[in-house]
Image (cartoon, rainbow, N blue to C red; front, side, top):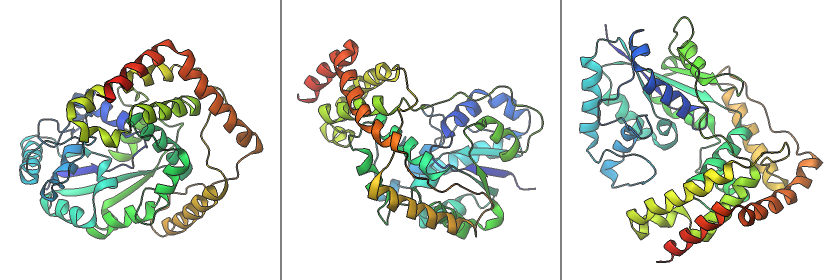
Length: 349
């Protein structure tokens, strides 16, 4: 009987980091139930506790590099071979490979190569869908915390580009379905109120009983005011996209300075009206894209996602308040002001 590999491919911003940390911390509990979370191979990243290096491996032949995606700096052949070797040597009948970048980075020809590389196994694909608007705001939060300086409007403009499939769930599903077949694809809904570890334990792996512990919340949204303050910091000391061109050492040092500033800003007490929102013509265009995607999803999955509603007048009025709060945060937080001054000086060297 062939061993089974469950590829958990995302989507991004559906609790993937919390799930991966759980799997890494509770490898023995999973192994006792016949599930291997492989960590002794070139595909596994100890920093992110996932298999992002497998994704990067499928770009090695292209000369592509991204400092924000963990690489093993080995050929794809070696990365795959090391992962296959660990799975085959272990006694567990099932292996769980998790990397959200599998859904966001791989094109059809790379998915075909992955299918060929693992054709000796019973491969299953698990994908978690989150309501579009929730995911857009969560993704923007991560983008700012990662170091970019673009506004929410500019971020949405990127998502609306025809070549961007971030909000085109049906296209992502079709890429994997066309290569591996609909029978190998499991699509699950994301709920803020349901622990992602419970989803893993029962729906992904089909295990009985309760998991040994709940998942910890990772990458929590610090609120719109703190994010706007952070966006301004990114503008002042330089967008992350320019960092690698200045040298990797400088990139790392500025990233550490940025992280210190963010930790301080994230401690800001969050108010009920301190949330992101897309307005006006962009909202209408994004809503149209979501409607189109939901219509296409109906033919691919039974998972139902909500459409985008209207922005309340109170939310529109709160936008100006968020701008004011962001300005105040940058001026009144001593640690933020000091760290920003040092980072700005270093960025200019």
